[in-house]
Image (tube, rainbow, N blue to C red; front, side, top):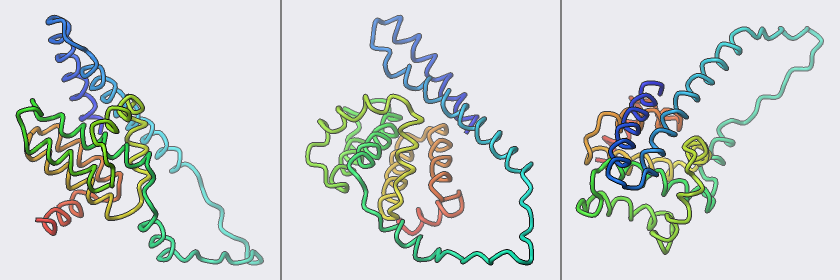
Length: 204
């Protein structure tokens, strides 16, 4: 995640300089820089939290302690995997997919990338894709907020659709940094590299 963060910052800075010199909008480059900084910050926080957890020692229960009742995890997981996806979560999914579509240099000439982005609206039952995306993007200028919202999606079918669509978009662009970023997100969603590739093979 830290490596991807530095890659995004470098890309953002170069794009910013190019856009500024030509008098173009610098919103896109700033988004990349912000995303890179957020990823580096998240990685650092994760490492610090992990170190703190290692220091904590859990005391053993005394003999007279009442044994804890085990939770019914399979039922809980089943409920989570079938939890309905909220409209806010759908908006975040659309934004994340559009972000991966943005790795392709020109969406206006890349019909496949646009179709993949558009089909996300169909999957989530959103009627006006462009209007919804236009309204949602300003809410998620903070990449941390965007990723956090996507990670709240627990419904298995929706998570797999998001990951597979982002993978197809990444395959079109062929950008190594896009692959690294996607693998990090997949891991956060419970699909490590091996499990993610099994899902891709099954889909293919």
